[in-house]
Length: 181
Image 1: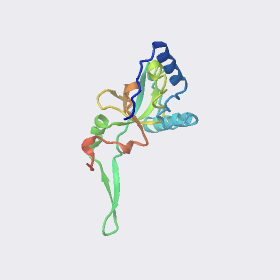
Image 2: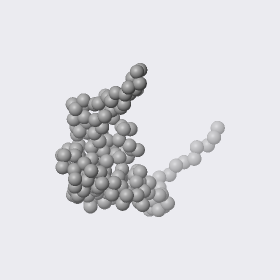
Image 3: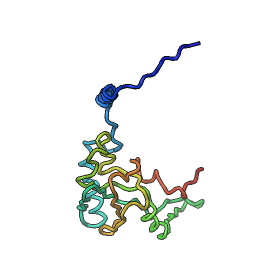
Image 4: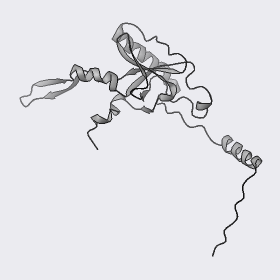
């Protein structure tokens, strides 16, 4: 029979010393962002150029406080081009009703602006920012304030409502649209 050693409860000082050691030797979690620091300016320029193309004006919305301004992903009107048996091509379009529904049901969004107080404070001390301008993110459907900014579907949401950073907008759809179970 093996002998079980007695476990003693550490003193408060021992516990505090252990916690200090663990915290001083633990790295902060890496940021979830797909945007590297050297890519941030390029991402901002691309977003600006895209807004100029869509609206004729640059993106100059400044998110306030801890809010994040995101552009809701709406699928393109043109779904795909198919080639018929006779060699001619036909374009399949999404119905307007489906595209309109994307504005309210979509869960993919492009981060376009981050408020000056976002990702500040104790809550984000170890992790740092969860996303950066230029990241595609997964956002909750009904927790953001949806607005039309110069005709573009946008959502403003608190910094801690970003659920995930994703590679691209087509990676995520509402669960009812899944074709694999």
